[in-house]
Length: 361
Image 1 (tube, one colour):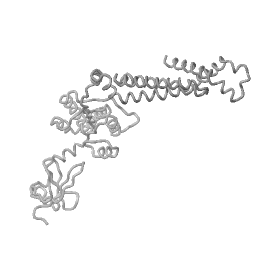
Image 2 (cartoon, helix red, strand yellow):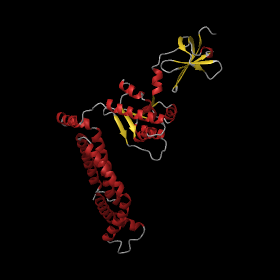
Image 3 (tube, helix red, strand yellow):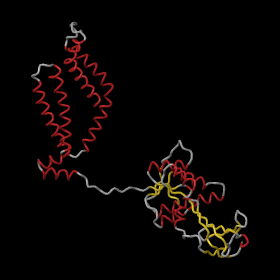
């Protein structure tokens, strides 16, 4: 309906423009000798036809602009509309007075086009000045009533609460430590499990391999535990990216779209997320962070379990699983000895301690 109204207005404006300006155009091209062109009805039809063609090009843009303007006006405070409208009226009044003064000048383009130009320019300036000076206008006119109206219309500013999304990958669900970390309260926000991660987990749980099947079922048990402990804070989203085949890339796409963080213990996924500028929380990093600090020169009492990769090396483990590589420890396999820490290597993949038997140089 709005589209047809705009096209009708184009026809009316075109007919008016044709009657007013086409005769001058005929004179410029020496075409005013033909009796048909001097007929105002013919000029109106020509102008209407030209503007109808223009309406076919611009009507959609005008409709979109009017809908956008309508939405802005509906959401604008009443005080802003009143002050802007008052400025618009004053601008149009000034434009009318100027146009009335110019009407006495016997120059066709001045006394016809100038009032239109002044109306548009001064009307716009009046609206902008009224809109920008709304506070002063409210104070000058009726300070008590208008200020009260404005305060009543302005919604109370509530503190913005930003939802934090944590997207769980398959490895961290199977690992199981995420449930204990959640129960301890170290992760806030909403845990998100995309459907493609859940499908991969179910596929692992249905595997013919006994180890994989056990790991997959443990992952499903972990999810069930999280749902019961974090009621309302577990979101299973159907978001999928069919053009991407790999689950890790889909997870990164989802994290970017939701503005969330990927929770994983996969070292490679951790690095890929960093390359794609996706925030990632690595469970192994957290585990390493809470391990007791070991510094070079510290003494430890360990049991050498096996030989190392290099010649004459022995390997021991702490209670948390940290590997200790002992130089010259091969001869102590199966024995409990005291070692001195020489260096510590710590990465997202884990921590490794290098030591030597006490008394060895």
